[in-house]
Amino acid sequence: MALTTAPGTGRQPGSRQSLPDRRSRARLGRRVRDNVTGHAFLIGAMLCFALFAWYPMIRGVVMSFQRTRRGETTWVGWDNYVRIVNDPSFWTAWKNTVYFTLLALVLGYVVPFAVAIVLNEFRHAKGYLRVLVYLPVMLPPASALFLFKFYVYDPSDAGLFNAIFRALHLPTSEWMQSSTMTMPAMVIASTWMNMGGAVLIYLAALQNIPGELYEAAELDGAGIWRRIVNVTIPQTRLILTLMAMLQIVATMQLFIEPLILANGAGTQDAATSVAYLIYQHGFFQNDLNGAAALGVIMLVALGGFSAVYARLAARQD
Amino acid sequence: MAQDSGGRTLISPAQLRRGRSKVVYWILLFAVVAGFTLVFLGPLYWMVTGALKSGQEIAQTPPTLVPNDPRPQNYADAWTNLNLAKLLFNTFYYATGALLFQLVLDTAAAYALSKLRPVLGNLILGLMLATLMIPAMVLIVPQYVTVIDLPILHLNLLDSPFAIWLPAVANAFNIFLLKRFFDAIPEDLMAAATIDGAGPLRTLWSIVLPISRPILGVVSIFAVTAVWKDFLWPKLVMPSPETRTVSVGIYAFSAGTPMNVVVAAAVIAAVPTIVFFLIFQKNIMSGLTSGSLKG
Image 1 (tube, rainbow over the protein chains, first blue to last red):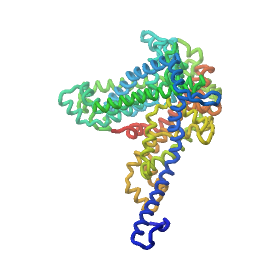
Image 2 (cartoon, chains in turn brown, cyan):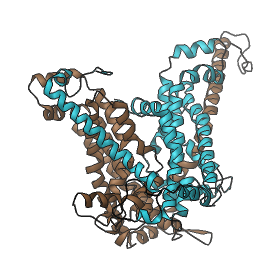
Image 3 (tube, each protein chain N blue to C red):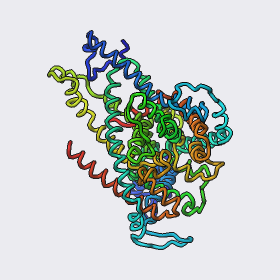
């Protein structure tokens, strides 16, 4: 070991204490050097986090209590919050977003799990089916949504859905031009685009269930349905709980579907979402501070939800 | 029978071999394969062929299954009118840069957090992981404000590729994936390298990275697809027509362009990701399942 530290100071040279002293100094020097190296490896990523994640987080909260007009920034207390809550679209946006999230939960949460259970039973065409389910996830969302907007949800009978419904003698719909069908239509498009990831994660979880559990259940006379309820679901509960939370947080940020499918607000405001309102205020109404306030409201709402959810999920175990 | 996993699932292999169950199995398999092909490939077929139809044919009821009079001209129009070559090049450029920045900076960070463990390393890791809890939409406004006037440096990054590259590095999920993989590399191996006189950089380059090829592959795929699919962020920070990504460019043109041409452009924009997916399909699948969530 190279002893590069300066000779001990203040103590008599050559005394017995100086050797361990020198050693510990050398060790200290080494530790400092190791730490400097360690942080040198970290610094690049850390700066990026600081600039584009940590600082904006704080800045968002600060901005929500300020107002910038003609380059002059002043503290305005809760004004931005009052303004944003009084926006005529505020409650509509929350109502729509919650409605979308609940509908997406019915369709987008149950369907992927059911699909994964079925796919897990097949001994053939496994790879093909998996690739199919994941294919839409790889499409750029804008591409997929233009497909839905122009060719699937065409309100005339030339659209794919209406053509199929007409052929089956079912009532057709105006889809995005009908305020009641707007949400279901967005949920269908969104689920089609996004479910592949969830299916693959559930499939991995299903493969970790020990086969003996099914065997034991079968010996006890449990049919397929009972085996799903008593073995499959309890065994995948952790993943199911986690995915529900992730999905809710993701769908609450609904943005690109209303933007492209409904040109933003949609028929009679049926598509306006909270995220779209943030975008609208920040980048069209020149109200970045109001948008930041709405962002903070969203953060508190989703953070509160996640905390309560995690608490409840933990209590169940 | 192609029994690859061999593990017992919901329905026992013995039961599946019995006469009646076997018939049910094959009928179900056939139905699911047909149904999935319709549901997942059907819309893509509709998209590709629809964009080949003329304006009249697309508005016709009932719609035609195969274009009567295919017009590849729609695709050619999309290519030239929307300047797709430029848009695709931009997207490719941003994706490649984001990939390189993430590979260098995130790998170095994960290596430091996993093996070098400097003081406060765990706190930093915790703060990084905490960003996973923050919904992206919440940060969009303050991030935008930061990018138009970087603190201290007072640089405006609008229309600069760094506005996409640097925020991409702040990806806690990728750092977490890399760190977990590095954690599994035995300490003995690291110690052996140190005894042989290798410094941290040398150890990272010659020991850690070669072992970590699978996870580097997964992280790379995530990095590239994230940039390719992203919409709102590039829309905000790349306002000029010359710097737009392909998704944003199509959106910007969608209002004043015939819809068949818009969809033709959407098809062209999707081709690179689909080809990429078909090539790296195995890595993507394994990365999603074994790499990300377990236990």
